[in-house]
Length: 288
Image (cartoon, rainbow, N blue to C red; front, side, top):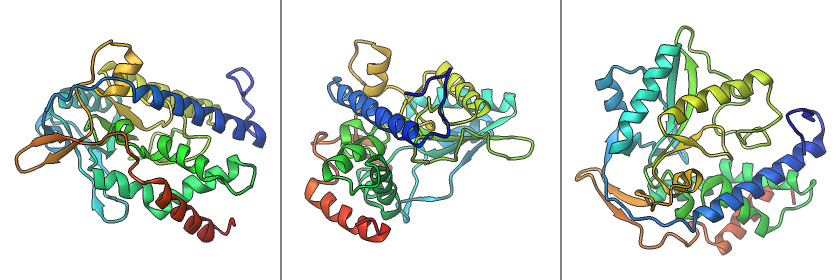
């Protein structure tokens, strides 16, 4: 494995080895997360943009859609709003702007995201590369989809209303604070501790994470943009010994009522459908 002392930035084998190590590490973490108890609090949601306006915090929000046609939902559990506003204020004082790329996702959004051709193709391409240019197995695609697009509800912190994906920009010129690549990169640069980004880009990751974690939003090691609080992953990482307050929920924006999922352990994209998606992706990518 590459180390901080000897980063093998230009070695293809080292990049592939790190990617596999990272994916298996993420799989182990999410597997442990599934065993964490959850006692859904039933807490409603609050608008992040409305909260930022009320707090006088300069904050940006993505203008793209999920899976091509679904509007992003910039809401999060109500009790997490004060911490998120404190983070945004801290960043403003530093001369930065926090951009929320994504917040709560419905089950439909999470499902369609995992099946979106552009996203699924990235997964297939990365698995093809990981397999040394050979056709990836369906089992590998299934395992990687769990880590990369939360194919099981009980590992999807966005469907719990407990996570935000973020980017950061400078206030004076609107230039992104570089972390190696922009949001939703899917490569050996994706893990928070990737040795394949520059020293300054790694320091930016460290500084941003410190500001998030000062207010309790912990980073997911597998993605440099993802932070969460109060869910089962949070309680696993902090070793709190407590049940998570937030699980996957359906949310009614009219009443602000939440309903826990009936089934959190079945895949959003079942194996037989994933096999069809794999064949289609291999054709699109000409990797057959």
